[in-house]
Length: 363
Ligand SMILES: [Fe+2]
Ligand SMILES: [Fe+2]
Image 1 (cartoon, rainbow, N blue to C red):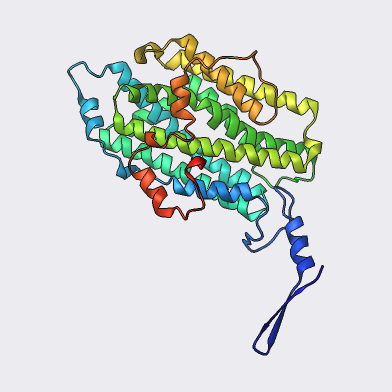
Image 2: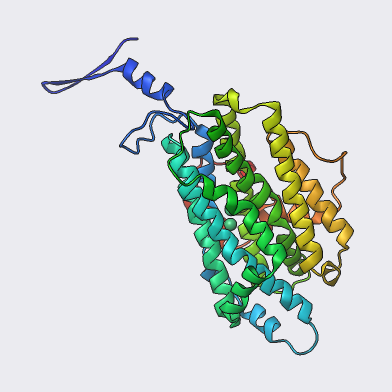
């Protein structure tokens, strides 16, 4: 392949095309060319860059959201807000205040450490930053309502069904923190499983019990500021699920030794356990009847989304085909094009950064 020669005055620069193409070919999800430089060009994983732009366009800040109504609701003594509804809010804040950090930490210290292509590191950095925004939004909710933070922290530590959900993901993450030799198939499988566990099982399935409860209140115009923040968070989560799905797929495509029948079954069993733990948590802690739902339709919803996540990475669902029992919830959660749902600042931020390269259809 011919080199490109650039002449600038009396100086000449030779751009070695072969070298550039070799560098491009050496870009990999894992075990790619190690470079001291964060050289993003040439882009190999275009989806990662596109997703980064999309995530940035959805930027929001907690302080932009009005909390007056929420404060009124929190202090309400007229009976409009029940104690059970306050419990749901506290539970939501308590669970996510720790869960957001667990995800962000794993993204930075396990996944971002292991991947080698710069555009993948770029989008993972944005992912971790969004977890910080989510954590920040919970601090904002607590301080606005005047909730004692220790009460929320205690929820996380003292409720057995929450603790089991946490142990389930953290045990996997810990094992991958050391320098792991990613030339060994078993280690590659462990890393890919980590991506699956955090993206599809935790963010993709185990977040949905509480998301559903808070959004069910939002749908009744209760705690509208908190509801709005949770809906923004969910929009971000759908990008995180997609990010980790694509990353997982590319890792598997580049490393077909990972994709054994035994491994596929292991992942399905991992999702089976994630779904079991989420249902256990819902039945233990979430008074679904208080928001006008039944336990049966809510747990069936968890089965439904767990199967969708499996299909997303090319795995067999765990159940025979299920009709979505809560279509309104999916509509609120898997927002793609309903931009009107997100009024106000998110759309404005998006406009401000929109360079014309992203169409409304991408939302
Ligand atoms: Fe999050
Ligand atoms: Fe997330």
